[in-house]
Amino acid sequence: MNFRVVLASLCLLAPVTAFAQSDDPVDRNVGGGYAGLALNLGQAHGVGSDDNGTAYLMGADIGYVMPRDTWNRIEFGLELSTGKAEFGDSGADAEVDFGLIAMGKIGYGYSLGGHSFGMFRLGFGIANGEAEISGNGATLDLGDFDGTVAMVGYDVVFPANSNLDFLVGVNYRIYNLSLDDAPAGGEDDQQINVTSVNAAARFRF
Image (cartoon, rainbow, N blue to C red):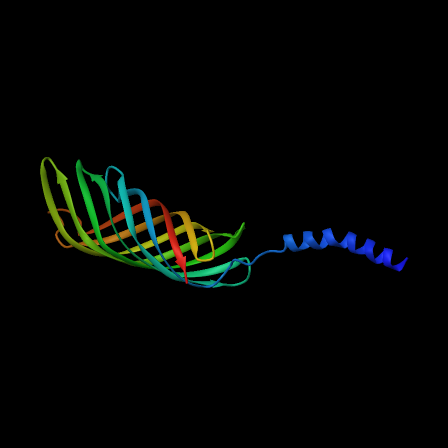
């Protein structure tokens, strides 16, 4: 009689135990360093300019993930990128070639389920390059520039496996550039606002 009671109890507990095991959360919020490649595509607008234009950036992203618990994380990163922004200004076309953008970033992330994380990011850094304006068949070289860049963004991080993540997101950047050779009557400083979508792949180590 006792053997039958024990056997019946095991039969009842087995599916409950199996369900509990399959329902346990798996912690994929793993800390450590990462390095990857990123691409930004978006729309550029010079403050005071007439028309919007296109912008792109491509480059490397390195950083470190610091888990707070299973569901939250903080990320520190450094972006090194290059690219171009174009927009219309008073009937002419302005073109800004970014030689190098170096920007530090910090982000706070929270679990979205399915091992994915949503990341809010802030960034600040420096930028340099050269600019020119074209119109009426002529091109005016504005020379080199130095400046700063600030960013706010949101990414979704999708872990593909234990070593590879994919990211997609949006960001808004403000560039403040100081031109070496501003046109007569023009401003030495130029602000450019860029709204972009971005995609990245990064390897964890």
